[in-house]
Length: 236
Image (cartoon, rainbow, N blue to C red; front, side, top):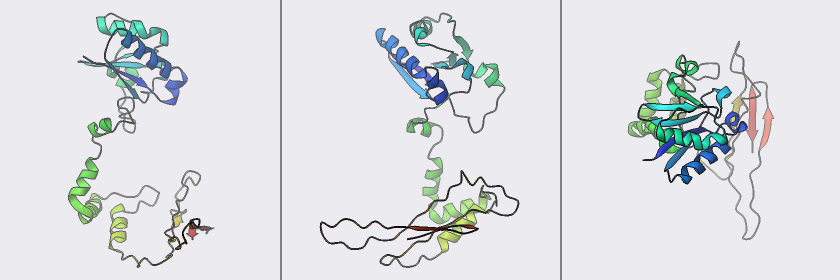
């Protein structure tokens, strides 16, 4: 049977030795010919007991912390024998600081490996994409319209209306070196506060490359950026 152990990999846990602890646990398990899977997660947020290591059991996860490199062998032995360990905190979801919380944004932090597609799928990842592929483009847009979803940039404009407008707009024919101008609004409306430092505009250009002779260097499209009071415009 494979032992499943969870060790955080976020910056806070790494700063207090989580990487070394993970390596020591693996080394101790290998020395005992024990099959082990070490899952690297985000931190649960209990930084005063980091690195907090969790073990998967039939009754749920059990937490230990703060675990050090020197604790690795006794930690493995205590899990195998069921003996009490000085670093044992008990069932993770029963730790008072966590038990009284209802997490939303960080609901899966500390539970899944953020780099694992398998974990992502187990948590419902790609369900929206599968649904969209089933509905098709028009059905997907209509679903968003009916949902009442609104933009979160400040003005609260209906997202479905934006999508429908773009989908129903006839694009001009693409000709040689047809320029694309992208306007990036920077003023969402009266009374709206916008963090202009974090909302940097994104610019694009669809300018085609000019035909070139063999062995000649490629021509890279250039862009000119001009700012106005309401936004920024890029011109190739």
